[in-house]
Each structure stands twice: as structure tokens, then as C-alpha cells.
Length: 145
Image (cartoon, rainbow, N blue to C red; front, side, top):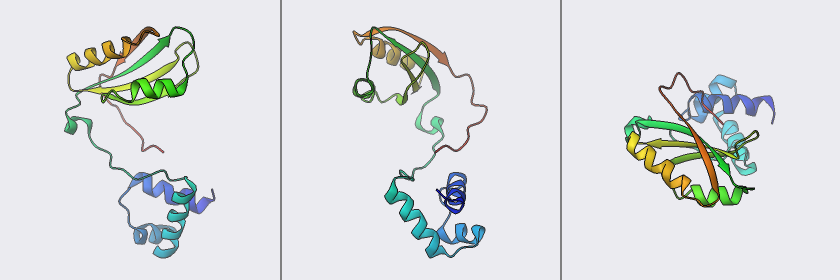
């Protein structure tokens, strides 16, 4: 990816609603040239999609936690996806190095809903144990790729 495309992505991460005209003005390029570059990055999969960043509280998600999963034996990524994608409170899953097999990001409406979600995750017969860290407050979050 060249420096111009990196700059376009930086602008889009900062303001996903920036028009091609606004981006072009900032990087000294025509709106049509910016559009071509964005279209090419989408076609190559460098830009995977566009979405809105929503305040979790607006969706009723007042409780947030990161849960380390420890499985009995090995667990493969397709199994993680199959087991966890069906749980609406699970908003992210990562396969990680270290002692844990996976890290799960959970957003829930209450402590009770979080507890129910953790129990649902633990119900998997291959689950050995979990370790949870409840988020007390968000200090800052960078726009992410």
C-alpha cells in the first residue's frame, strides 16, 4: 500500500463519513481519483467494509468484559467461531498466544446478563475454565482497522 492510500485510510479512520471531495482536498487529489483509489482498496480487500461506531450505552450495553478461555485439549478457530458467534453478547473473539486459548470480548446490558453469558460459554463440554476481567471504564479507544 502506498503512502497516498495510507493517508486516505488515516482520514477514513478519523472520519468515516468524509466525502471523496473532502479527502481529495486534504491530500491534494481530485475526488474522482480518491474514489478510484478507495474502490481499488475495497476490491483488493484492503478496506473490508464501512460501519458506524456506536456508543455501547446507546444499545443498552452497560457492562463489558474480556474473558480468557482455557479449553481441555486443542481448539481450532472454526470451532471457536461456530460456538461463540451464536451468542449475541460476544462482540469479538481472538485466538491468542500464552496460556489462554482465546480472548472473548463481551458486551451486556447488566451484570446478570454478563454472568448468564459467561455460564453459556462455560457450558461447552470442552471448556476447562475461564478468567474474566470486567471493564470499569473506557479511558480511550483509537479508531481501528
